[in-house]
Image (spheres, rainbow, N blue to C red):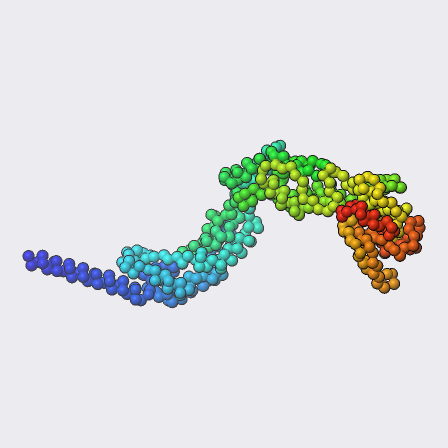
Length: 462
C-alpha cells in the first residue's frame, strides 16, 4: 500500500517537473526571441539564434554562394547570390519570423532532425531584384531558344483553317524568378527551369478561340458594300478575312490594313488632286489640272467606323465619311452649274443648270510666275460684300483695294471680284495690265455673278 502511494506521488512529481520544463522552455523561447532548435533558412541552420545572429550567419553563408540554372541536363547559366538583394538577411524580416513561431510547439523540434525550414516568401520580398536577374537570364537565353506559337486560323477557299499552337522552350521571366527565389529559400544550388517555359497564349481548344473563329466565318459570309458616287464597291471576303486578328482573347481588326484599303479606294474613286477633262465653251475639250475642288474618303474617321461595322458581323451598305467638295451620289463631278474662266479668250461664263446666265470679258493675272491666275478646278468657298483686298506690289509697297463683291476660289488669295480701276476687259489687255492673280470683273457684271453662284460652286480656270 505504501509502495503504490509512493509510486503515485512520484508520477505526480514527475508530471509537475515535466510541465514546469515545458512551460519554462516555452517562456524561454517567448522571452529570448530566438529560433527553435535546428531551424533552417535558405539551407542555413539558425536554431537558437536571435534575428541579428541569424542575419549575420545568413549574410556570411550567402555572400558568395553559386547557383546553376539547369534545363534538364543542359546548363543555362550560373549566378551568385550576391547578385540578388536578398531579404533573408534582413534582421527585421527575421524578427517577424521569430514572432510567428508557436512557442508551445517547441517539443516537436526535439524529435526531428531538422526542426523547421522557414521560407521568407522571397518571391514577394525580393521580387524586384530577383526579377531583374531573371529578366537578364531570359533575355540572353531566349535568343537561341524556340518561341511558342499561338493557335491561329487562316482563310482559304471560303473557309478558315486552324493551325494548332506549338510549344516552345523560351523561358518565362516570372516563372524563372519564382524558381530562383524558391531555390535560394531552400538552400539549393540548382535552379531547375524545365517547367518555366513560356506557354502559347492561345490554344485551339479554348472557348474564346473557337468563338472567334466562328465569328470570323460569319463576317466573311456577310455582304459589305460601299455606295460611292454611283458605284457599288463590295469588299471581298478574302479582304475582310485579312483584316481579322485574334488578340487578348477576342476578335479584332488590323486597322493599318483597313486604312490602306480605304486610302486605295479613295485614290481610285475620289476626285481631289485629279486632272479633269472639261468641255469648254470656245476651245473644245481641254485638260484642267487639279485645284481645291474635289472629294476624298475621310480615311482617319472611316477606319474605326469600318472596323466597328465589320466586327458587328451584320454586313453593311453605306457611304463612307467624305471630305472636300463636289461629292455627288449620282457620280457627277463638276456638274452643270459652274463658273468657267478661259484665260486665253479672257472671258468668263457662269453656267446654271446647264444654261449660261452670265457672260463677260475679264482681266486675269499678269502672265508671270508671281501674278498669273492659277489653272485648276477651284471652288467658291466664301462670298463677301464690301471687302478690302490687301497685298504687296512688285516694288514692295502695300496696297488696299476696296471691292463691292469678293468670291475667293483658291488657297493663295485668288478670287473673283469687281475692279473699278480697270479701263477695259478682254483681249490682250491682261498681258500688260493684268491683276495680281485674281479674276478682275466689270462692275456692271460682277453683281450678276455674285447673285448666280453659291458657296461650293466649282470654278474651272484654264
